[in-house]
Image 1 (cartoon, rainbow, N blue to C red):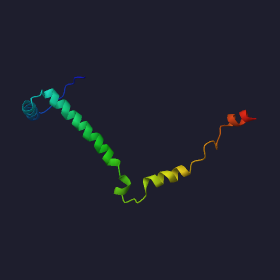
Image 2 (cartoon, helix red, strand yellow; image 1 turned 120 degrees about the vertical axis):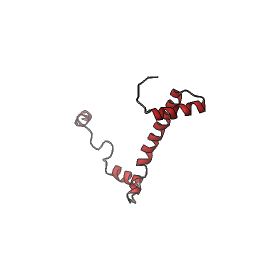
Image 3 (tube, one colour; image 1 turned 180 degrees about the vertical axis):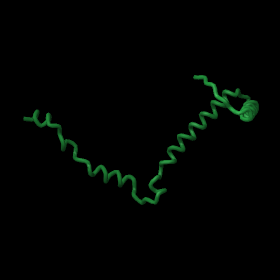
Image 4 (tube, rainbow, N blue to C red; image 1 turned 45 degrees about the vertical axis):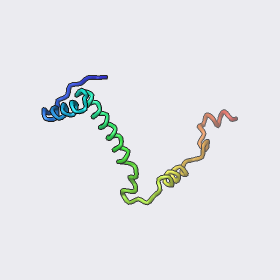
Length: 90
């Protein structure tokens, strides 16, 4: 576990200490929990930010249909063999 120095307003420290006393925890334990909760919420927000993005902007395209259309444009496997493979076959 790493240690770091951080400047926190006195009012926030007082509130943090009150929470720690009420929960019977150290200030550090309360801060670790707060950071863990913040990071969990942040990663969830990232997912929610992009999930359903097309629909939010009025698109009626189904994502899977779009993906299949794009993949349908790809050449068949082996259609473009490298030149050295063609020479090896002879």
